[in-house]
Image 1: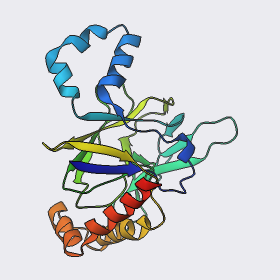
Image 2: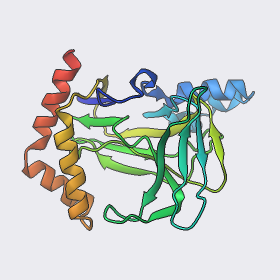
Image 3: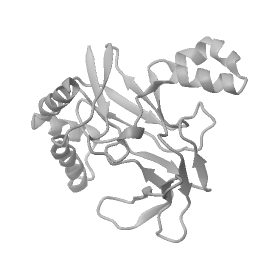
Image 4: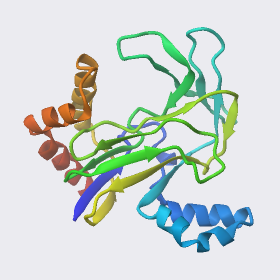
Length: 236
């Protein structure tokens, strides 16, 4: 059994809006029934595609605004009746540059969803392509038992889009033949040291492959330390 710990950092300002992963089959059943397409759920190949996959839903209404000029990032804004805090912007060409890619928005990257497993398992993240979605073009994968960093949502931006609370931001799936258990936690302050070590190494060794980063993580014995933090958090 693989234990997969996930959740936001304990002091994240949006903790009260955080949601657990929703099984993709459940999400699409609701979506297709609402849109009079429930017949698709009876297709065996469609049902097979939904296995072992989950949806991360938007915790609140969001607006993504395109770039307003050369080198200027797009903006991602929380839409509310009180104020409109910005929670994301364009992505940099690299960690050492102040110049942004003008057509890519990146948001909720500040440990709102942070995963780690007590064994090697690859988490794959994709845009929510089976829904009629507004986020597209950017995904990724990493071994969440061998590397420790938060998920970051990203999309190409062509036009201003509005994402309602509950609409999908991403799909995640876990590539493993072993059974696993998803354990929601609040990551305590101690997590920050190890997450920052991963980010710092990626910055100073920007040409490193994922396997090289995983080997460095294992050499330092960090899996045991991060799992210990997660286990303690799960007891609370």
